[in-house]
Structures are given as C-alpha cells and as structure tokens.
Image 1 (cartoon, helix red, strand yellow):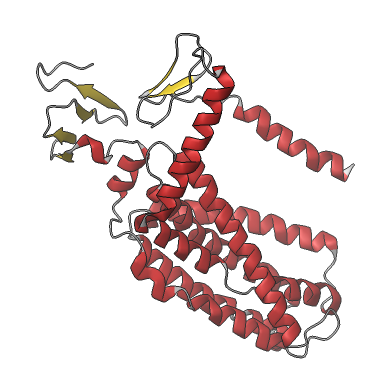
Image 2: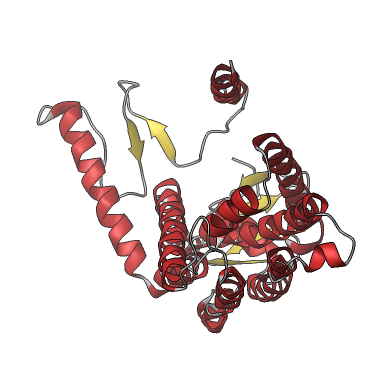
Length: 327
C-alpha cells in the first residue's frame, strides 16, 4: 500500500504538468511539413530534403548541439562558474554516519524520521520563499558567502546532539533533531537557490535546456563525490554503524570543509543584477542585438534592428525602428 501511494504521487505531478501553458519561443518555427523544427540562429537545420531525410537532419542537430555544448563549456564565463558549482557541492558529508547514529545509537524509529522528513520538506518551501522575497536581488557571491558561513556554524550544532549536551540543556534528542533539521533545511534551500540562478545565468541562447541539464548533472555528480569523500573520511576516523567515538571529529571536519570553496567566489560572473538575469533568461540580452537598455525600459538598438520594448505588464513587444510600429 505504501509503495502504491508513493508511486502515485509522480503520476499526479505528470497530470498537473499537462495544465502548464507554454509560450512559443521567438525565432523557432516549424518547417513547411509541420514536423521538424527549423532554428534560425543555429549552425544546423532539421530538414526533410531529398538527401538523408528526417533522420539525417536529426543526426545533424544532435552533432550540432553537442558541438555547441562543448564549445560553451570551454568558455571561461561558463567553465569557471561550473567549476565553482562542482567544488561547492563536492565537499565531504557526514550524513550517512549521522543517519546510523540517530537510528542505532539514539533509537529513532521510521515513523519519527518520516515526520522529520515532512518538516524539512515544508522548511525547504519556506527557504524558497525567503530567498524569493529578500535575497534574489542580492549579488550571488554575497549570498553564497553568508549562507556558507551561517550554514557551517549551524551545522556545528550537531555536535551538541552527538555529545549529548542537548540533554544537559534540557532538550530531548527528538526535539533537538526536529529543530536542527528545520533550521538547516531552510538554510540549505536558501543556499541551493543561487546554484539554480547561476546555472540559468551562464546558459547561452540556443542551448539553454541542454546546458542547464548538464550543469545540474554536474551538480548531482559533485554531491555524489561529496558522499564518497565523506565515506572515506568516515572510514579513516574509524566511525562505523556501532562505533561513534570519533563522530564528533567527523562532524567538525565535514562542516569546516564547507568553507573551502569560498576563495573561488572571485571566479563567479560579476553581473549580479536581477534585470540582467531576467533579460538573459528571456533571450533579450544576446550579443547579436548590439544595443543597450535605455531608461524607458527598452533595449535600444544601434544597428537599426527592431527595438524590444518592455510594456510594463511583464511582457515584451517588438517595435520597428523605422516606423515605430509594433510587429
């Protein structure tokens, strides 16, 4: 029954995704046959010509996207932030050792761990709200810096649980675990949101989805690397499922290691304004436009190209520079 309920939840998500309304991206249109897409800005086209047919065009598109992806990652403006994302996520973790400690040593049952998981899920949503309300306009480097420092300090509170000091202070293990997980979940989500923003910011136009998926795969791979490094440190310190003598040292080391990527903050993109992010995500600030943002909310063109106008209600229109009419 439990597996049936949990497997039904992804199906609900799939059903809801059908209701999502997507807008057509300018510059991408279907060919006369109505089947393959034709991308004007790409170095390749999907066609149904006499040579090779649809399969040949699809193969050319795949090769072209792979080539563009490799070329994009080679650029310092993308490679260096990617390097930071990897290093920031790849620091050692003590999560596995702490799981065995709270189950084997403290005796937490599956039901209680489920409640803690529920609390952390709600706290993660609160973290998203906090970031979206107060932190999204701040420079990414500053957000990374302070969330890492505060997260390290709060992560060290696990030492109180490991050493039993919380009971000395009159706080039960269960309540301390819930409160600690709640706070760390909020801060963890706040610190993860800049990763998503940074990944979206460095994606060049034309391969946004491919490069974003690649960056998220690198981030997940870095997380696995952190777990492997954490396992190696756990073994080096002699922490096992029954021996937690050096667990406090493990928690101390893994938390302090989170500070190691901070010197790499200098390699992040210097542009941190919210307008720059929104413009790039909308595909409006590409280098081929050859213009600049004017005080009236326009991207003013200096090469007699169409002018992109912010209508003020969250949408954009295109005006012809010659006659001032919207197209």
